[in-house]
Amino acid sequence: MALFFFSLLIWEQIISYQVEVAFWGEPFPHHGDLIAALVCGGGFLYYANALGNFLLDLHLNSKVERSETQINQ
Picture (cartoon, rainbow, N blue to C red):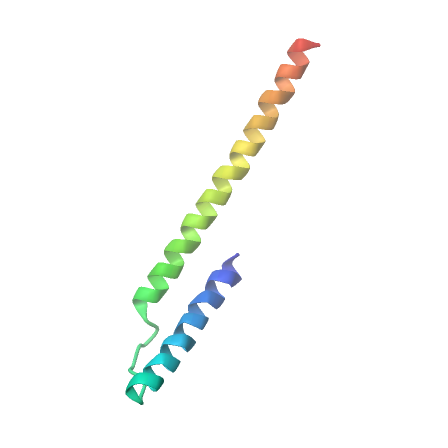
């Protein structure tokens, strides 16, 4: 997952470089492009948090179902 978002950041840098060369004929100095890094980092944290919440809910639901079947038996 981390590699996906890191590669997304790298591809964004490559695409922005190509667009600048195509339109203006020269690239501008980005020095890591902080905004793109923040957007990709925020997406990574949002996705990781959502995945963690999903797995936690899945685990808790399985415990509830297991306890309900033990009560019914």
